[in-house]
Length: 85
Length: 205
Image (cartoon, rainbow over all chains, first blue to last red; front, side, top):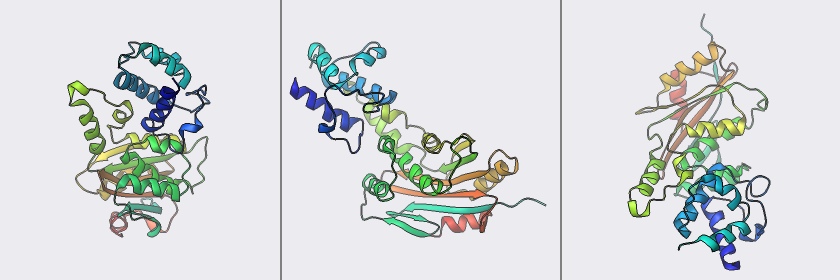
């Protein structure tokens, strides 16, 4: 699980082009949207594509992302339970 | 008697150099555009993290506009600076990236962050958000730098009172070939806003 969380942090930084943010800067429970990392709606769509591409998880309703992308911890829990690859 | 307008300042980004009013303010050895523009962003102390999410055309247009507009002390609540941009390659550089992501049906994972930049005028939105511009903006595709059109359109906006200032010019990019020339037109300034002057400034570097 710890490995998955580190992997997610690295992917978030790389795929969302978060310049000057390091893996160590993101705590497991940090909010990804709003006051946390300050991600926006396009970033949310990128994360939905990442779930599908890297973990074989296809969200039928984009609104589901609101809960799943709350923090790296919540994302990792969800991926652990639902991943198909 | 027809009213005359003036070019207050201008910026070029080409050949690994950023210059304002003909004077270099940043130069770099990087031949790769992404590296060059990132180095320019840092050197010019452009504190705007969303810059790194933009496509290359928007980065080029944003930085050229920013070096001119950040010295203007624009009213944050209301300012009427219009944008009239143009180029030849449209958003082809980003269009190709999107095409590459959708042409393989087995690996069909188009990036939303790439797709949103598959129009050239998105760069105008990025500049408008940063500098809180609420006035008219347009992006035209031409075969060549078209000073006649820029002059006519900018003067029309200024004469009709639809804008107090107009930032206009050319921002063209395709892979590592790039050429930006933006200039700010308003009532005051030393250079008259004439077609010959615009062409002369465009070709000055």
